[in-house]
Length: 286
Image (cartoon, rainbow, N blue to C red):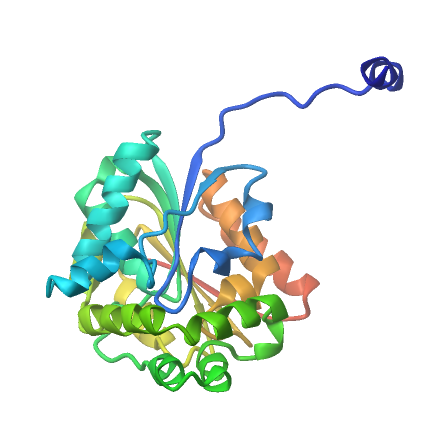
């Protein structure tokens, strides 16, 4: 009866199509849940994968800690490479990464250039010489307010259920230990010298009020690279995928799907006008 009703209404089943794979790589103080503002928007056009390479209370990470081995960016890149090679196997991939995850994405793109079609790097760490980690003190002292102030320009953008999740995690000794050991192993890592070896078009998005990564240092690292494009979002901190989610969602989709290099500039201008904000877009000079 339901099928007859649908046929009478003239409805058709949605056409099946094979979607390109989009891999999301979260940052240091985030988990896969931090993409809650973005996944549904991107799943319309991509087969979205969120590999959990940083599970702070997970047995694999704590076995490595118990063996006296550091949690480093190359180790995390190994984990991402293994996940894609064993469980996805649909190259080339599109990648959107945040903060520390951007270093992992760059490592993978340099190792496996044929695997990566395009990348979007949000507030990337490891592009400059000096970075601030106020987020660590927030986690170390279970101080949620300090944690939020270090990440967001306006903490009111954070979902309350997400806050409850983070508060619960920060009370767990194993989770906190895993995060702090990861900080110890990755804090001094820098991928700036590897950026010129990236062979895929790359969009870099920074928040103007980022308290962790210096936007000007990021700009300086990529401004001379012809495959890189840099966008600065005002009134935004270290998590633009949450704080400016609508703009970021539109930018990511436009940049990854369109062959036109000018599309991200036009899309950002349109999004900025609609949200009553201004943003800066610059291209690598090559």
